[in-house]
Length: 155
Image: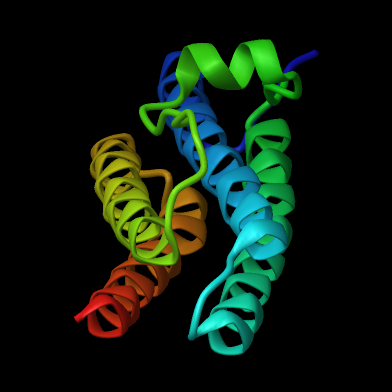
């Protein structure tokens, strides 16, 4: 299929590959956040249960937007756990973390997703992929703000 959106096949592939890494990091952080929502305990249970739900709900919407941008570029979006594990920089941890460790782990996860998104933004700028930039730039803002809120919660 010939795609003529003003971005070469090579450049669309670069954007799609970078977006796939961001999708994998976002999905992995989504899963971690959802699991923490189910399992958080302690004196801040109610606050964290709601905060984690807000976070995973937002990321659930984001993964769809990221995957659809990959498809718009003419590439297949990763869609399996095996693919996400290979692409993601965020790793799962073993055990049952305390509420404090959950907050710290999510803070670090949001910082990592912001870094990954920033890499995608640089590639999008390099290949003049404005639409990918438009999708990714707000992600950076959101993940940096969420990391800040989690830092404030942990202190």
